[in-house]
Amino acid sequence: MLTEEPADRPYTVDVDGYAVGVDLGGSHVTALLVEPNGRAVRRTSSLIYERHFEDVVNTMTGVIRELIGTMEICAGGVGSPGSIDPRDGVVRYSPNFGWFNAPLGTALRNRLNLPTYVANDARSATLGEYRYGSGHGTRDFALLTLGTGIGGGLVVAGQLVHGAAFAAGEIGHHAIRPTDGFICGCGNRGCFEAQASATGLRRHAFAASRIIPGQHDDIGRSVA
Ligand SMILES: [Zn+2]
Image (tube, rainbow, N blue to C red):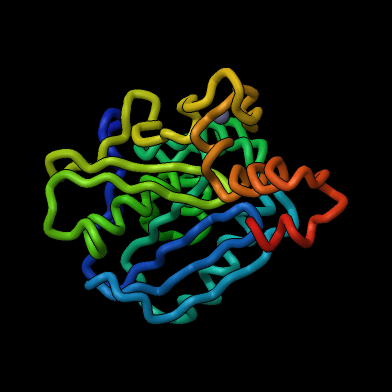
């Protein structure tokens, strides 16, 4: 079942039974038990208290073990923020966690003794929607993720596109207001994400109402 592919090809897993899908978010780990047809049947979640790599791996393995109990599971899939090499599941850079070259795929495979595929969360969402959701039945498909940031993914001719730097579909830092936009978390001005994410909309609301952020955060939260 476990397929250690050559380094130039994506790591792959066979899904011929129940599988686990994990969303590694900024504040929570959420795991779903999934039938072979993609239907989720059980869910567990945990807060992330510590952001060190080993602590997060401990939290993830605890959530997954609690979810699956004594069930026979054939594979796991993890969507994580950051720049991730899906060939080996190494998180090359995660600004959320402050990780560089963190071997998340290897750590989970070793701890759980389970074939586990790790990819960027937006690309994972794209693959999920393509296989089981709104992109099902298409060959070419684009997905936008809108939240505190903006991400995305592309399927072209039936294949998920990763890109040379594993960032295909990452349009959040494309500058749409480079001269007079908001400063983005990446340091540039007027990125799509800085202007149009939930965070961006909150800043527009503050700017329009001339409210100073921090003095009326209850209003800001209701906007965001
Ligand atoms: Zn940016």
